[in-house]
Length: 130
Image (cartoon, rainbow, N blue to C red; front, side, top):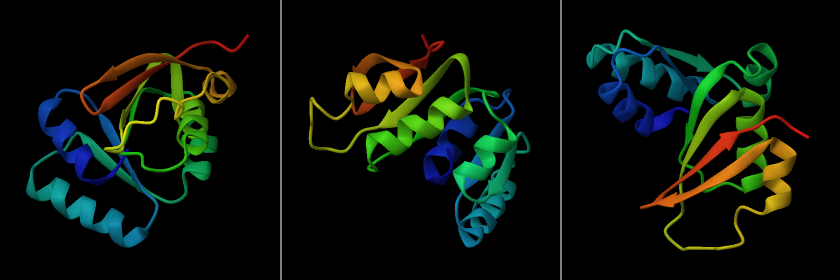
């Protein structure tokens, strides 16, 4: 994932190569400048729609993070396309709790299983589709 959360993760996990995705070019440019200023050489930035990124690098990431206030269907679909088997999706949840937010049907369609919430974060694991 991109955005400010990526910068925090990149600061904590300096030994891991990372890719930050930003849909808009202007945000990607900003992210590149931030990454340079913070000396996070292990972070690459890509700009564009997640559809294009998922089609060019399917199932190639061990982890995906998202500060998702978007519909779960989109978040799980694209995370499912990007994650390698056993990979982890970490989502920052909206402040209001909705126990129906992550339906079994949506997770199954993306090949994800719910590992449950912790704080304001929810974790999912990529499993092989049946």
